[in-house]
Length: 178
Image (tube, rainbow, N blue to C red):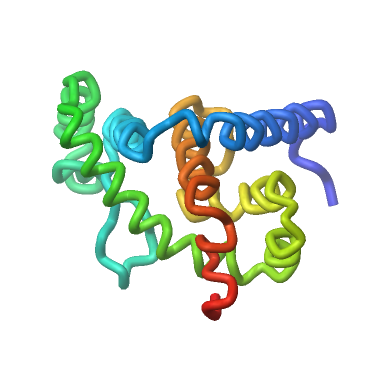
């Protein structure tokens, strides 16, 4: 099977993933949860997205503010440009980020915590390795393909920081039947 990327590009991707995990581990204790929620909410708004709260829906994110590119692409493009260029109030960003975290946490638990290899890393207290192993599942849950988009990198780092804050074993409810 032919690889999609040259080996050096894949190596850079692995280095970027390791850097994100290292940042999350190093900075988790320096940030308050509220500040991480604000950053997540602001990142979502910057992409014109909001959390999908309907648990029955497969997707984690949806277009914000009624944007619908299928119905009216031009109107949605203008609305998106306006939405992402306007500043967001801190309280609104924090609420968006908190809502996003709750939705992410529910959906991620199923995908991340059902991986036996990852659970073994958590039980062996190999946090860095566990977070690196969880990155592909986290990106898939977000519906994102890579860590090359700066706002995605910021979101993933924030999510990892929240996971570090609560602890991987708590996130996966180890002992409580994940």
